[in-house]
Length: 470
Image (tube, rainbow, N blue to C red; front, side, top):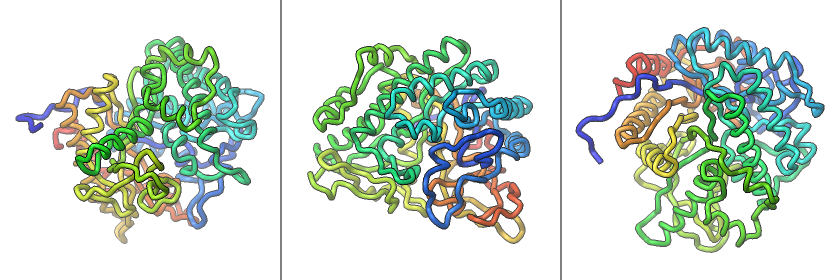
């Protein structure tokens, strides 16, 4: 639909940016923190690991001051579970609690709304050794951890995110690394883990509404609408299979209280249905998320399954993330979209399309918690970084969001990835996402100076004008 006039961004729109603890903090074993599964995974050889990362743990005051200079209205970050409860005895680590209290206070000092992700991939290693999410005890441990967060920070945090990209963890378990001397879980085990995460999430949402009645809470999922390769009916069915099994089912459970019916049939047919105990359905009911947090990077195009192993292929050459499933759907090429230097599809119109579908389905406000483009930014001799490709990416995606708002979609805010350069899970610092350049290489830490990219000043202007320049 082509409108005569596009809607403006709301006056209280949350212009923000995002990071995650393990990718930005460093200080992996300081001040009482214990190892997470991320700390224990084997990292790709030749790339930076997460032990120091961008040293945000020690430099958060400097970084947040720069966020304020950029004009951020919100900062989405994650709390490291292993800083708060570092041992299986469940004893609270006061140094960890105080660190995040300081981070929150620093945000408040500049009138930046802190948006907290409670779990961003980094499960405590002591729980992984006991079975991780395959062990129902982890549900209790997660609820206890979140209760500490609500108790300690509940008066200061308005927006909580439960679990980051649960669908990525379940569908692409190798994406965040391989545990030492342990094989990846089977699909049956993964869907049992998924069920336990769903139960934990529902309990925590209910707890949040009880302990923090003025706060809002929601799941943070990687959501994207799919295109059928052709108008062939079988391609349309395959695309719908993809959307349900990889997206809608993960949001349907917290919003509607149980699995999507097509997902149930798929799980039953392939003997993947998790064990569901008598009280589980009641636990899942009435979690009532207040909004949907959505990570969006790109779309994919889907064709009908050919019923053999050729249905499965690596995404953009990334062997950690495989697309397609035999007998369900297969990935196809789309000649109408651009691609990044890493082969990721760039599709702003797909962003609008996805926002429309998500809002139509759930009728909840949407908060964008990740969106961005990874690139090998170049530090020029004069100390500048001309990331015009990033500005172009954001301009087009914000225009698509403006169109979606005009379509009637209720948008809370936009927190792209990332506030500053972080360790990319697979490409270290070769693949950068931030508005702020962190001057370090894979192994050479240099001074880790923060340098404002061209995109920093573009976003500063966009925020100051509340997106009227879009």
